[in-house]
Every structure is written in C-alpha cells, then in structure tokens.
Image (cartoon, rainbow, N blue to C red; front, side):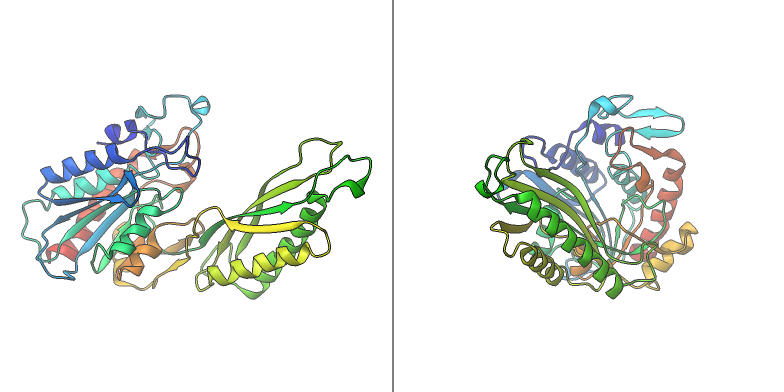
Length: 378
C-alpha cells in the first residue's frame, strides 16, 4: 500500500505550477476501503475538482451522531527537490530498516497502518462506527479540513490524527500563520535620495517594530506545556530592490507566527498590522500586510481526556505538545475529542530522504487495533 501511495505525486503548494492533484491517492484508499466493507464518500473541494477528501465508514448505524472513532490524515506532501535525494522520492526504498520516500513519514505511512488495523474489524458487529478520513492540502491551505467543517462532517466522539509524533499522544499544538509584509516605495537614481522613497529604509523600521512586538508577546503569553513556552515570530525571508545604484522601490518580508493555545489569531494579526503601519508613518511609503493562506488556529484538548489517556497507556508515552500545526483544530470544531498520534518522527518530515522507521509499524498497528476495539467494538 505504501509503495503505491508514495508513487502517486500529490504535492500541495501555493505555487500553482508545483501544485498537484491528490485524486490518485484518494482513489487507492477508496478502493482498499471498499474491499474492507467501508462505505466510501469522495468530497471534491468546491472549485477544485482535482482535489478531494475521502470519508469512509464501517458500522454506521444511521444516527445523526453515532459516536465512534475517526482515524484521520492528509494525502498531500510538501514540494520536493529531487536532486537532493539519494533515490527517487516517488519510489519507495526499503533500506536500513526504514522506508524512504516522499510522504512515507508525513504522512502517507499512516494510512496502511490504519487500514491494516481496521481490517481486523471488517467482519465484526461494531457498537459504534469506525471512520477513516483522508484530506487534501494540509501542507498548504488546509482547504480539505476547512471543507470538512463547512460540510459538518464527519461526526464522532473521538478522533486520532496520525501525524508523525513518535507515537506520543499530543494534546496541544501552536497555531501557525504565514504572513507577508510589503513596503511600496518609489525607485530612482541612488545618487539623489530625493528622487525616490526607499522601501528598504521603511522595512528596517518595520522589522524593528516586529522584533519589539515579538518581545511583548513573549512577556504577555506563556504556556508551561510547551518546550518553547512563548509565541514565536520568525523573520523568515525578504526580497527587495533590484540593483545597488537604484533606490529600492519595493520590499517584501515573509514571517512565520506561532501562537499559543488561547491566543486569538485574528486579534494578534490586527495588532501586528497596526505596528507595521505605525512604523511607516512619515516615510512616504505604503505598507500592506496579508496572510499567505488562512491561519491554522492553535489546538488544545485535555491532557486527561479519555482518548489521550488510552493512547498514553497503550503506547507507553507521556502526553505532550508540539510546535507544528495539524488539522486537529478542525476536527475538534466538529465536536470530537481529538488527539494527534502516529508512527514516525517529525524530524524526518519536510526534508530529503524522508523515511518511516519500520520498527514503528507493528506497535502502531497494535495500538490502533486496541483503540478501535475500545471505542467501536465494546
């Protein structure tokens, strides 16, 4: 299964010429789940017929809210630079007790594990349904999970999102916002500054204001559950000007903002935008602030929740938190007690020669079988 999933390119990107469909991955999963007796539903995204979610249910009893368990994951991957890989990223390579391939860890590898665990219950009379959800575009816009919320489906009591956590139950993560700050000035000959309005001069002031705002956020917000227990604001990359002897007419700074649970993304964005505008006052330049895509809200559930405690006991791992974003907020919004838990380590994701440790596979299957039995069978 993993070999076939890795072989299907499903890159999602905000850059149109890199972005790819995920339909082939969805079709493989739907076929396998059909064979197991699941009722499968494809959900093409509005205005994107080349992108779809999949909802597959075993043991539905026709109720509006039948309870049960959701196993969820995304079918897309990040972009890839094949020249940096030691082997073809779209051909699964079995070496050194690892499976190498794009998405093998993050997170196509979760689906064969989940399906193998689910197969145990294909002929069982479930007391509550088991649902497997596969989404699109998690690595870019989260359009797939946003569409689930818009559609109000699926409904269940519990959800596991199979991101690579080393099988540690994760009950909270930071929110993620990617933002663009653009300064619009006027170009001119560098021999006379009065001939233009230098966007880089203003950007210097904007960056100082952002670093001051970062310090303020860290002083005002802490969360003891996180290793980095404050919100972070990273000045990630900047593009500006075109030649040393021209006044810089335009500059763009892209930043990464990671907020703690309980922080209001929209309110923080407005404060950040105002700081940027204030920094440009009197400069004869214009500042615009925008999000690269809609923010991923922070997520937090109870560390003492029933599903969190079950996964901790079964996997022998103490519940914790992570700084990366997931689709957990969206499933939680649908009313499910949600935990992020899966095989593989996030350290192997988003980099050349991505791999899934084979030693994680059988323990992950065993844990999921026990969780399914606990929440769907009895």
